Length: 191
Image (cartoon, rainbow, N blue to C red; front, side, top):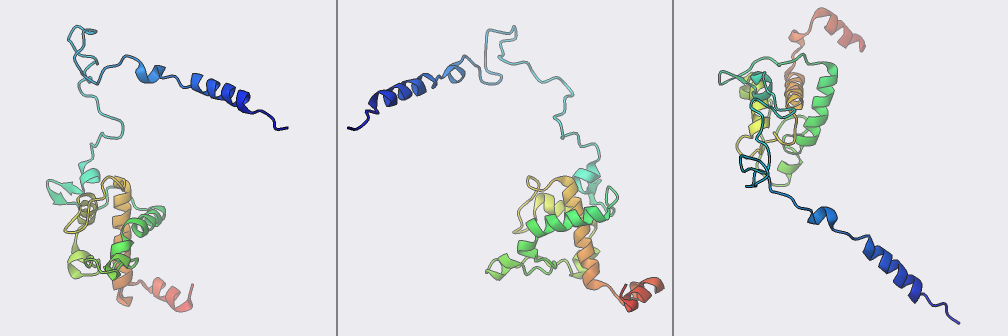
């Protein structure tokens, strides 16, 4: 003798259908700023209060958010770069930049080795002499075949990436003459 599951199944289906209500979906609503008789000015929503700035969009320090002052690339970072900032810049660089520019910044990343256009090397004299604002601007707005990363990388992280690019440039082009006597002694002793 087989148990009859049809009645419990029918009961469960009925309860499930009772739970599928469309009250929130079918409620009366207006599209934003659509015509309406509700308010005296004929709009369905109130206008934005004059001078209101959306959270996170008050960009008083133009150098920090554009990399430029009076249309020229800035030469200094808008905040002090710490070791933690460099490590964060390295992490962001490895995620967003190294596929094209490689982890050393020579422009021979994995994407390039797969046949795409060669990316710029950060070790050319032109880019070694470029102000830091140039790197921020290129990350923000793109350049040539490079897309912009403004929507993917926060402004402060763009500065951290620029700082890490400077560190890469220094590491590839450092000379013993640039070191102090103490640094030379540390290098020789291995500390």
